[in-house]
Image (cartoon, rainbow, N blue to C red; front, side, top):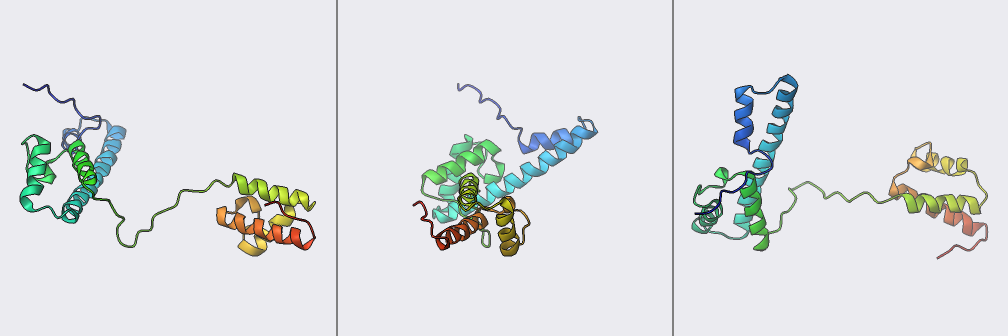
Length: 179
């Protein structure tokens, strides 16, 4: 006899739907529960789509696909739709161990993490100090080049270009730049 599995930390979709249908929550809590239910349904749809894409990418036949689901669920279900959140995540992790890698949908670009602007900000300040120029000088360049009135508002790429402009100004004045 095996020990019962502890409940997953997040209630499953059926439990959320039951609480919502029973009207157990007060109005503010009901709105939060409705929002949580919508997020859980969207997550479930994404996970089911990923499961089917992974099975296709791994060339699993119908029997192997269903056998994996039955084994994972302990014989409870034979369809991915019957799996709870924890089981869906475990199945996706199993497919990833088998060599499947999730991809982004067509037309969606991977976002790059934001680069820290601290280093470039320090460099721009040092270049301004070296040239004995006020911040207004960099503000004028930012306004003329990027349409932003303050150089501190520039993003990483724009800051990089501003630093390049100040380095060119420094070379034009005859000063050597640090490597």
